[in-house]
Length: 491
Image (tube, rainbow, N blue to C red):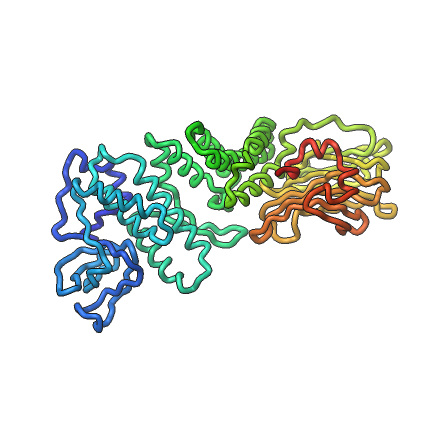
């Protein structure tokens, strides 16, 4: 058992800073925090002595003596004694009178990339030293920010030279009770902070900026476990929406309000899809998603937030049909849907001469069929339909005549593995051979946003551009309903 786990956060926080009413006994020996990565723990107090272990920033050590410029220490995490250079550690005092000095260091390290483990160590030291009544949301905000940044740095690191240091720092912060978990998704393995400090911020009397920082971290879609069952995922998304609604907006800078609008747009679009899947009313949720996206002030959009804006727009675009009522089917070329096997929807293509007993074409899917999206061309030889198999992935189904047969082709937003994207019908080109489509997707971390003229016979894109005005046919024949409803036409 470790004798001096003096800053194990779960124990400390679970006790509610008990020393506010009952002073804690001071440790028998002073404590030191390692300030530099790669610090050698040596068998003797000289540089030529063999190193017994390598220590990383943030490691806490019990100081048991001093020999020249070396400290004799004991590391309770690795359960080993030795000597370290005094210049590579900082002896800290955790008496109540020293708390302001510790907090000043925390404030400095909060926004110092690369010093997260050190900052977490000082934060824990402050929480131990400060009287309970003096502790507000600030140290928890700093702890969350540093833990989240460390997880992000470890996830995105591509430099082999930094791998060992990052691994060591992760082990150090884990010893303080900071939980960082692995999430396996379409982009590979990502490390995510579990958000305990941020949840404490949301429960405290924190500032608007602190609550915004916490809410954005806790609702990050990149840290959602893709293996969550649908029922749990729907409950989690409802929790995310409630959390974001609890953030006061008035005192926040416009760029932070933008971030909240973008995140809420993403969350409400997911809720709209989930409600549709469970046959609950989804129109209000989808409309909320569209409104939140429209509330983003693109003039105050930070450059680094552009990807998040595109991400939110694609998620909203994928589920936007939930905001619209399903129109009554006409007598010309149209579709009808029936229940298939459990969870399955079957689509039938009908016209004046072909009813549900003898459809022109039929196909079943486990995706959500947006019947209101069905658009037939003037010649009655083609019909476009939106089908959404996943929360952030919507396909375009094309029913069209090839020779004398009706064929159903499924057009995905991108050719790679589904991550995030939608493709939608944007208009018919006279002549029954070409169709206009809009496509947005994230593929291997890059965003694809383009407008295309597609040959329905070969399904090949004949022309494409990043805006409709660059294609004369697209500009001339784009569907008026599509233009009034799509989110692909934005700044």
